[in-house]
Image 1 (cartoon, rainbow, N blue to C red):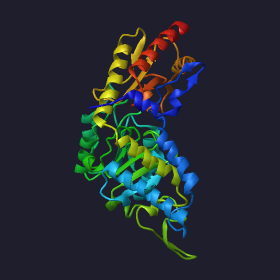
Image 2 (image 1 turned 45 degrees about the vertical axis):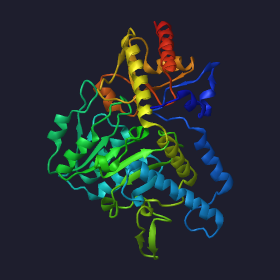
Image 3 (image 1 turned 60 degrees about the vertical axis):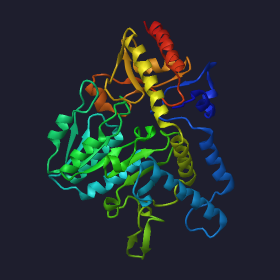
Image 4 (image 1 turned 90 degrees about the vertical axis):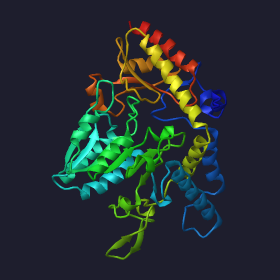
Length: 405
């Protein structure tokens, strides 16, 4: 097992930045990760060597762009352990992927049907299903969250019944870092005949998105949380489900035939990819996955676990600081409040010391209400973070405490 964090850091140009004369300590990775040079190079290479629209061009640039674009789809297929490349649909990110599914679900649900989400969902995986139920007349239910920040699996089992048509589960809580037992929860949902979507925005970033092992019907994730560019992501859907799923957008590429009166739809994946795709970012997403997948995943996991363990130890020793979310199985997310100061004040004062964290409700207002906090400060760790940066965070927090006293 080998992991050289210094060598990893050298691949990320932005980590050499300073903020107000202090070295950047970037701890906002659950919001977006930084990009290695190879991903940046992939973007530049596309625009400087083969910029063209894909699929139908009768010239060399279009052929090259199409080859790189579809090769990126193959990389995603392998990464997800998807049965077929046709099940990989390019999106603008996790949110659009979820909305593609919700748009179809709204047309399929009926009054009396039930949809289950959870009390720790990101708004993209909560509001979307609320609206689908309002449109269709179906009933919307949620799995409660325990005091430790875990899903109540006993309550989840009690919610499932023959009326349950759809279940949406976050692979990992963006606000707490809780890793949910998605395989177990999926199996329970499938036992009552429900379709299952996994919000993989945080889970895919740790290499856990094996859709065949999970057994789900849909899995959505974004490139920018996996060392790739913003504005591109993937919805994976089981072919047997997606082949007849109501289309999302209409326009070029997604059609088979068009008359002045009607149209028919293309095959997968193109029936869900209307219009000119985000070719450059899809190619760069493929490069990000290739780069990440080449790392020693056991060593990566051990490094991130060590960062969280060290941060949790320092947090427990820090007077006046309360960690929100104590799940037994977590990614490198430390969400906390302090006796002195609103989370926004904490974030501002940390920034003045070169420490980048996120503050607020993290697009999870019901979860914040569950813990009776206005929001939290959230430090989230990635493979390029170091134990020294964790120490720097808590040294800075001591200064924050003195400033707010």
